[in-house]
Length: 349
Ligand SMILES: Nc1ncnc2c1ncn2[C@@H]1O[C@H](COP(=O)(O)OP(=O)(O)O)[C@@H](O)[C@H]1O
Ligand SMILES: [Mg+2]
Image (cartoon, rainbow, N blue to C red; front, side, top):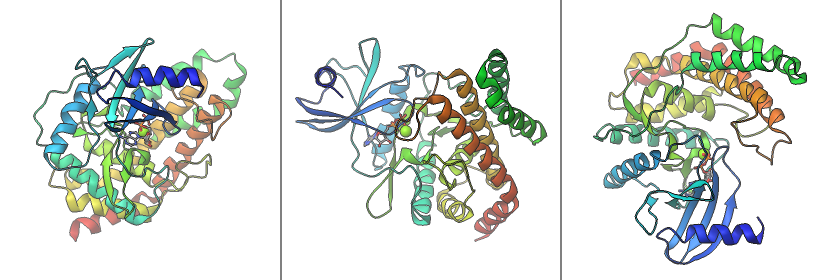
């Protein structure tokens, strides 16, 4: 980051209620927003330039949910308003948001079973506490885990690139995804519980004793099916190559058992035994869906941000990530009956 950018960011930061800004530094992680750590005389904060996909209304959702979590004695980042009392600052044609900094660690890959169990406990508590929140969420989350939608978008986008060089490179994986999707029993997610919406492992913060402290990256909070939320958590937390540029994904049953035991120990009947038993199938479907989304963006190169520490081009990143999710899908399917048995045993304990 050069000096001009630093000065600009400091000026932006000081438009929020943080006092004098002492330093701003970029945070490398994250595929969606641009994130900076801000030190100011009132404390430490996280400043984010919001991705254009998000409506500014989501910040009001975050404010209400985090206040409810605080009231229930949970650790959570909270929204810091601008000096004129707004949730968002619009500057340089972008929307900026400030939150309090949570002192903890986030991981690109879950370190061990203990972290997985603690993470399951945290998410179970999160769902329970937010089941008591009375609030009409602002802005819709259209097509959240609407697998059919992402599959048809992959088909449409691929067709648009028919005469390009990369079409041939991507064609086999595209055909494999479509073939698998058509042969699968498809779950249509439906439900009305408050969900985080993006439980990738690096959206959880832990303390140094492996305890899960809180969820961050709250842009996708809304009301939906907990089954899809858990399926998405499984595909991230239980992928042996999550967070690295390797495609040899394996579904880690040991991590799965740990996370589900944590979650089930907290589950207060928000989700039925029947739905819990379909978590492995939901995880497989979501891995296939994500594979389709990455592959679609390998054609279009317009959605995901390039992770420069792991990849040279967005095409390479999106294609590798698509392969990784496809291999995970296959391995979850292979181990689905073992995973269901694990859940049955946990429910009978
Ligand atoms: N409130 C917070 N406290 C401490 N670190 C944070 C906080 N919010 C985000 N971060 C750090 O910034 C990274 C990216 O932020 P995140 O909101 O997850 O953005 P993205 O949508 O791009 O993934 C996180 O992985 C975490 O390391
Ligand atoms: Mg994140």
